[in-house]
Image (cartoon, rainbow, N blue to C red):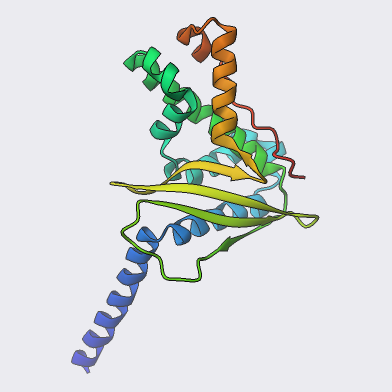
Length: 208
């Protein structure tokens, strides 16, 4: 009997760790798992947005922050020209500024979606685990309309990380880069003033 229990334990452990490893390596499972966590916040904590927005946004940020490669995204938003003009400290400073502004924007945008559902579109063929870049598509259903969401992911030493998001055709990375460039030009390419006055704004991507 003890031998039988050991066999069951081994089988259970093998299945559990296989699922864990696959979830860690599969970008589709990675995105879907976290998207469903955010949906639960939208459903279970919807009142918090009005009662205590800070706590509500913290719940979203707790899920969303580990998913993004902020250093790579921030560098892309600055663009090659302004990235090279910036000092090492200014680059690090923008990573911090951009992270806070993006998380605030995303959390506030999610709140407007209400009781929505998000469906991940899985590939028809088996995923090549050796690839370093992948696009994961989802469909957001607000009850009134359906909108496409596309995540661009890159595999790093820490696993899969989001490097860009396209919501309903609005490329957030490109939108933010255009905003950074316009802001830099308005301050005569003074990086310090550009960082000081940075505020990310992607609107609501036409989602209502």
